[in-house]
Picture 1: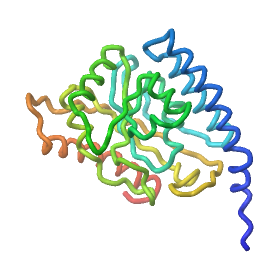
Picture 2 (picture 1 turned 120 degrees about the horizontal axis):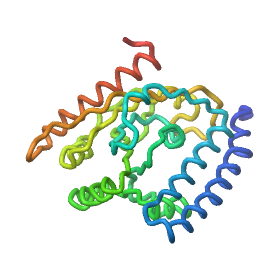
Picture 3 (picture 1 turned 30 degrees about the horizontal axis):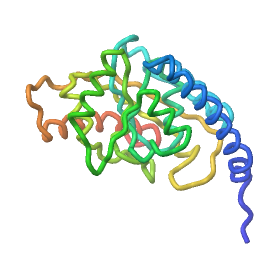
Picture 4 (picture 1 turned 120 degrees about the vertical axis):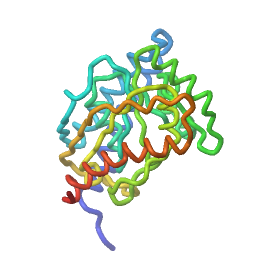
Length: 249
């Protein structure tokens, strides 16, 4: 019988209990704050503290590049590749913006985490029956409050670290809302915790912020237009990840 490596034991008996405590304490504070802070600003501060604690406890060191390429106070749609659950705390801990995510509906059923997301103004999408009109209305409400959005456009975590095709639905909404899109490239989180592995390891991660892209100004954008825009953003993120993580230029 093979004995699990050190980092498995560390994950199961130290990191998971520690992160559970962070989630309960900060999630509860976030939920309580929503009774008084309808915009979810304090809840976002809780999410940033939760993210910072997870990274510090795990031993993940983040290098942030390109933040000077975007304008403080502007509302953006941040579009990132997705290769690990650590992508979420890395973005929240690194970007000095009020951020909200678009999450699958099933996350809303998780105790504490789901309650925090719902009360904090994050968006849930039923992938089987998406309500595009309702989502767009909620996006515009968030924009009016100066909030930015995070989208993992691949739809799920990459099993091998390579950037999969970006789904066009979110880009169609971005075009209809007229919001600038910022491509984000995350490099190195797969080494910290890849998909389908219950083990984390310390590591160095890079988050690259690219120039904002204004979506094409079309009166009635189509699915074809959204696909073309998605491919444009995808190519930027893929080129960065392939060059840095796999040494391909």
